[in-house]
Image (cartoon, one colour):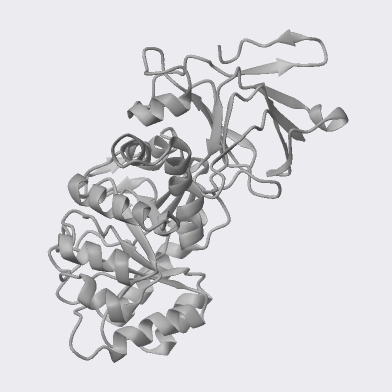
Amino acid sequence: MALVIQNIGEFFTGDLSQPTAPVKSIRIEDGRIAALDPTGEQAQADTVLDAAGGAVMPGLVDGHVHPMLGEWTPAQDAIGWIGNYLHGGTTTMISAGELHVPGIDYDNLSPELMTSLAVVTAATTGRVRWSGVKLQAGTALVVPNMTEAHFDRLAAAGVKWTKFLFYPFSADTTEARNYVAWSRARGMRAKVHTGGVSRSGASVVCGYNVLSWLQPDVAAHVSGGPIPMSDEDIDAVVDRTTFALEVCSSGNYRSTHRLVTRLQARNELHRLTLGTDTPGGTGVIPRGMLRNVLYLASMCGLTSGQAVAVATGNTAKAHGVDVGLLAVGKPADIVVCGPITGSAGTTLTDAIAHGDLPGISHVLIDGEFVVSERSRQTPPPTKRAFFCCCNTGQFEARSV
């Protein structure tokens, strides 16, 4: 079955090097993008969605979530959060650790316990497409005295990320640096909690002094999750390191502005990634990734296209997942959206630049409609997409 999205008014690529493109239609086959601006027979399909001059963008990639048991989050005793985030435009979520297990004793976190927790979560919550969302669960939270055998077990279970959160950094850096090396040798990427202590109170402060020798793949929520690194540490991390730096919607807006404008001044926006750091103490925020995009564009000097690219292609690349770009051969994870009636300007670009929320009409994951007619988390866009029976010239009023 083939699908064509036509009459696209704005096309966001997710690629920071070319954030927008004059693409007017997309052909989708077998869950992937088969052609941009198809012609002739390629422009015909079993299903045609007319974007009505609205915008399409890649599905948002939340690089920092804390899942636990499916769509239940113990921290807020809330259910259904993943589906709600989907209606906020997020199609991929990457776990930063399943630390909210009821009854977990933060004072007695053994290597076996933390390894087993990651393995079990990867084999359960991580195996299910919750509401269609690509939830990457089973991130291992490393603790002292782990061996290569623990990392072998994690790799065999399909774990893709390790994270320093409850690890007590000390003057002897050998073990921590080994953990990073052992992760990479097994195809896993290492992430680290930075800034002040976490909601658990069991983490330690982590700033430039640790990051300078640890050299992780991603430094999590450097501008706060919830407490940021110091201004001096933020400047040093930007100026003296090269790894990816994450901003979360649960952080400090002032510190985020400092970080982002400094990266931009150094022409290093390719290092910037986004997440929400939810659910947790900050709560459940279905539009958290959209809020990130709006803040970057309206307050930090990024163009609308750059802000979308950071929330999609940048974040996906930093975490090694094959999503976040609208290009031939890539998964068809797509958000169809546009400005809301009363929003600033006449285009989604205008609205995002002003900090105005987009209205979402449809969301696709691997070419399948997982949100149709309209999002339950946003007002409808002014220009609402509709399904079209192109062979007869008649239109189905399914989403107008």
